[in-house]
Image (cartoon, rainbow, N blue to C red):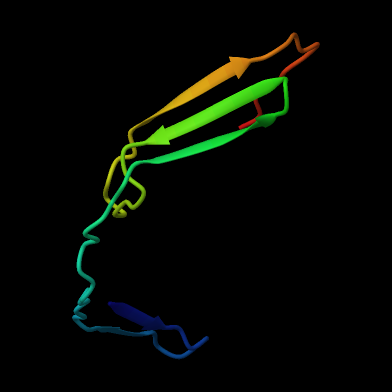
Length: 80
């Protein structure tokens, strides 16, 4: 970690220190697939399927998204 202190007209002080991070958590034993469903009743149905329910920060999320149109919609927009 590097800390820099700027003191206006006075000199700038910079100090570097090593830090260690320990993670004592054990990986979860049960990591079942997860499925989420959202939609508008009798109109639009969206399903999200993922192969696990828990992910590490460095993991890549791989899954499926299914859209089912139940009846005709006048307009539909996807906003990201």
